[in-house]
Length: 137
View 1 (cartoon, rainbow, N blue to C red):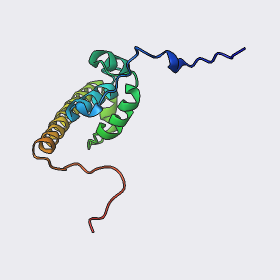
View 2 (view 1 turned 180 degrees about the vertical axis):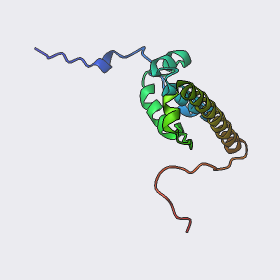
View 3 (view 1 turned 135 degrees about the vertical axis):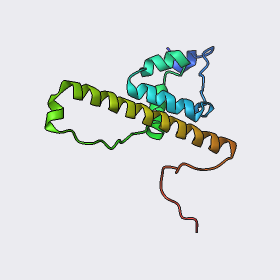
């Protein structure tokens, strides 16, 4: 009696494995999507559904996050003990900080968009490439 052996791959006819070229996405879109997900305004699942991204997008997102995630460091003045106890002063400070953050984020997006355009249009390498340093000798 012959032993019958079946593999899952034997029955895969008709299934098409789509390959997605992630370089088709503009850097400005990738940067925007990373900022939306990082800020909590969108989840990875919502992004996948909204933009019809592949199931394995979570790994791609981690790669994009390493490349496009920006940390903004603001220099802030210290508050006095009296200001820390005054609720009105705290609310005013929060509004001022939110305004500063919004301006810094808009500036950051604008600068990164300008760099993306300059790199694409003028074929310039403006951003440092990550990885080991190479000597030009």
